[in-house]
Length: 324
Ligand SMILES: Cc1ncc(COP(=O)(O)O)c(C=O)c1O
Image (cartoon, rainbow, N blue to C red):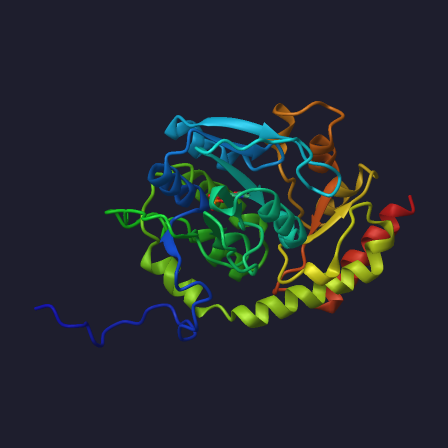
């Protein structure tokens, strides 16, 4: 008997699948896994990476035994080093916070796009560019357990295995629906830990189904509205320059302030802000631009869960903290 099952108990109720933003993408369990699949297919001699990067993206290079070259960035997150890219080398650049499309333009005009890998893990809504590859990570933008997307013209072997970890990575998503985020935090950490296995696998049907149910356009518009609201009120105190005309569906509002108490004070008030990225500190000098970003960029939430009243609460709290 091989027919489609009909009847019986229900699955979790979800909206119907919507249009897929990136139908051309290959789907893996994480951005890391996508990157490793790409590295195996292209086998570059060396990959030039920023030091301002999530350590997770260095792991696939180490695992594949590919040499890493590092370049420095400036206060605008642009590449400052004079990287001369040999024929068998790649350059990896991040669309930081989803606000760096202008920098991506410059990277693609400065280097041969056929050697450039773009990390859009923080820029889900930024369209893939004409280059070697563009990589996405779904769970930083939506309530999905995992998921990485890879868009490239390199022929990539489809992984045999289908990821079967997504069910175990879903408990924090359900717990947060019950109410407060704190009880699900250990589950979230466990889910993150399980993604440290980045042997490429196909995205699980569970993740694909939840991702398909997301109202992508609504999420994009809410992120834009929240971002603009924050920028209008906090932009004057933000040391990081933002080109609003190139912001579309950003990850967060990157608020750069030398007031070093703000991050912990926000967290104490249960406005949960991450640090991008603690591991940067082991790669850079104490007084480098990268260390400054890792220490002082506060990624304020502006995602689709929130409205103007939430943004106002963030602004009010920041204003009090900034005046101290
Ligand atoms: C810029 C960037 N790229 C890639 C990753 C890794 O994505 P994934 O966890 O889906 O492998 C992260 C963080 O996890 C990130 O911040």
